[in-house]
Each structure stands twice: as structure tokens, then as C-alpha cells.
Length: 131
Image (cartoon, rainbow, N blue to C red; front, top):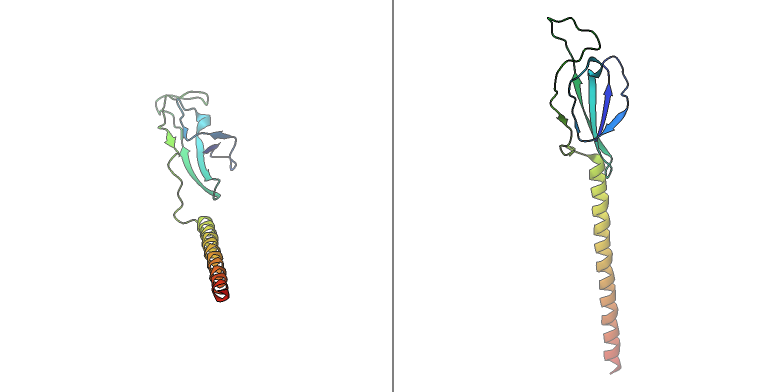
């Protein structure tokens, strides 16, 4: 799992953090923005991302400077649920290729045994005709 962050004014995501959970305590104004969690499966190349936008607002009764800390705890956004695509063309292709290779292997093995058995039958007929 890879976490990325960008402010709402910035179109680009910044540095990456790794882990299935991101928790922010005592959130600050400079931590407001879009948090993105991406999970990927290296086996089939599938990647899925989710984004969460966090807005920090100050209480209306107190003037707040940009460095003021607001005592807030954000419930952790857990990105560790399994990533299972509804339909993955890559997975279907890999499964089709592996299934075909397996079927070809079985057909080749059967053909070999039939050929071998046929040769043994011919050899036995030849031996019986010599008797």
C-alpha cells in the first residue's frame, strides 16, 4: 500500500509513505488536502486507488492563525481491504494462457502414451508372428 498526499491547490501528489493505515492526530491546516491510498497486485499488474479529501476548519468563535493546531483526531482510513477487481482482462488472459498450456501438456502426454502403447502392440504382433 502506498499513501500519497497533495494540498487542494496542488495538482501533483508529493512523497510516498507505505503502510495499510494512515492516522493523523491533532491535524494542522497544512495537512488539509487529498490523501490517496494505492494498492497493487504485482502478480497481475492490477492497481486500485482510493482518495480521501480532508478539510480543516477553525472554530467560528476564535480567531485562528495559520499555525494554530486544532485538536482533532481523524478516524484511520484503512486501505488493507483485499484488492479484487470486478473483472480483470489481464487476469483472464493469464488464466486462459495457463489453462491452454496445461491442456496442451495433457494432450501431449496422452499422445506419447498412445504412441508408446501402439509401438508395444506392434512389437508383440511381430514377436507372435515369429513363433
